Image 1 (cartoon, helix red, strand yellow):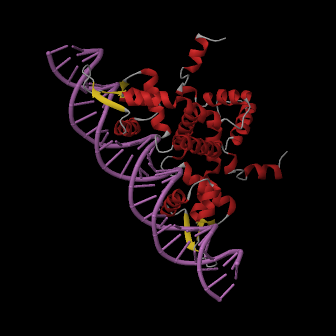
Image 2: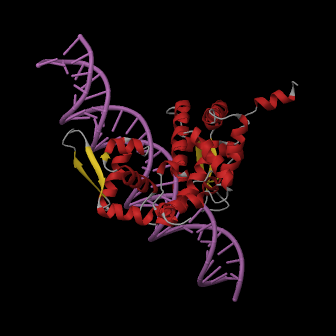
Length: 147
Length: 147
DNA sequence: CTGGGATCGTTAGTGTACTAACAATTCCCG
DNA sequence: CGGGAATTGTTAGTACACTAACGATCCCAG
């Protein structure tokens, strides 16, 4: 069990194409393409995520929103700024805690959400398209454990 | 089977937390953290990917390298520039095709690859840590089909 | 009630990612 | 062989993503 086999084991058996991180990035790329094809110049996936979370939970502080959509403080600020610029969200000072900025959807934001939620579901659908229903469940179960 | 159930079906049953794209992004974030913990300020995952591919295949044009590591022309340029700035890679004009820039590792680049390939494997290992061996295989098979 | 620690938000800096427009080559077909 | 099409690379512009440093505010223990 020693000898040549050990030498091979010591060789750097590193193949980029087999590493999860590399594959993960490519799956993300494909998902981004599908999303962009569906939403075009209207909204990015990040902006949609923030908007959808606001629709789901109602208004909340910018900081909390960031945690809910897994964006750090610097990133969520940019995303909120762009949603505001597009007239889909608005911000105001929290009277109870003057550190806080409260973010909420505008009427246009709520309309946009209602008009596009189905389309967003189809993006997920198309992303998982190559898999059978059972395989999709399997994948989601496994991915969730790596979160 | 009609009535209230139909109304519910028509409701936007969109839950951000259940969408592949959202989960995928969080898994990527965790992987990036693990990579950064292992490689610190030495190199980003992108730079490592390009370096590893160059080690695997030897020199090649910047354009081809980009395709091999799934980065578009603008992105691969930035990554190569940073590898060159760190002294890990170098570029030269291709005498046979004057449009092309040939990229190759320096001696320092090859040393860095040999010194860190095992560490890169451990990053993959740790990313997949929560899964049993059989589950890891399952995940990779499914992910590859979504590429 | 006060002072130190935690929280919230902004800014600056670096590094992906992608698009679009452009210039320089090279290729190939008529 | 000549000229349009395709390939290669650069640049500019927008949008994530994270770190670090900073100021303002809030909270709580002594």
